[in-house]
Image (tube, rainbow, N blue to C red; front, side, top):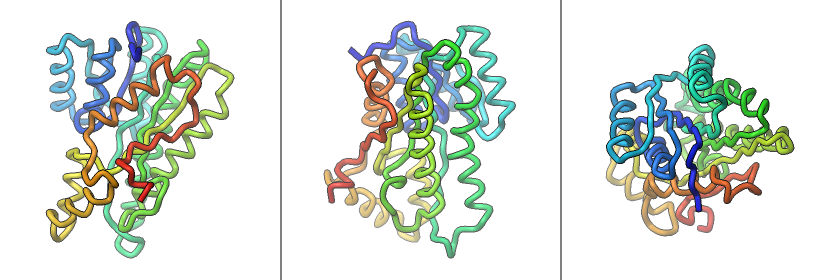
Length: 254
């Protein structure tokens, strides 16, 4: 179960954190994984680690905010392998602030990466997928897209947009061989979260507060999110589309 042998996958934002864990997990399941990120040093590191574990991986530099860059990567993969089987839109950035402290530039920056980035990469690959009536897309959203979180105005609104984009893609193309879902993690211990903690006056107190948000009393691990992504992109999830899967340690039960 949950094998991806013979499949080709691409993961954005794969140089660290959840994206890195997803790349490792898909490769361990048998997929050839394109590790993509703006961070070439860590992207190559992740690629090398996958190969060292006898997985298949290649690194491609990718800026999800640049349409021509997304098109270039799609053309490169198509020339080598044909249409992509699995697309994981994981790249994203965060921000701490209310409407009082968030600038218009802050909001634009987050929308450019978190929302337009998902749109750009999906746009680059979806034509190939629809042409052969086969393709799987999984987006990384957040619990913040489902429930309000203090001091996360810009971030939460972008994640809500990703959830709705997921649902629209799913309903528009459900009969054309495309499955589209998203995962909604709670707090996960990643470099992304570590960077957010540094924005607080008392990072240790913020860490304790973030951990306690989950009913289980701890943050998640990247590998726990990656396991859920593996399910969603596998044949075992063939009846699942338009879903926003919560991986939140019981956050929404509190």
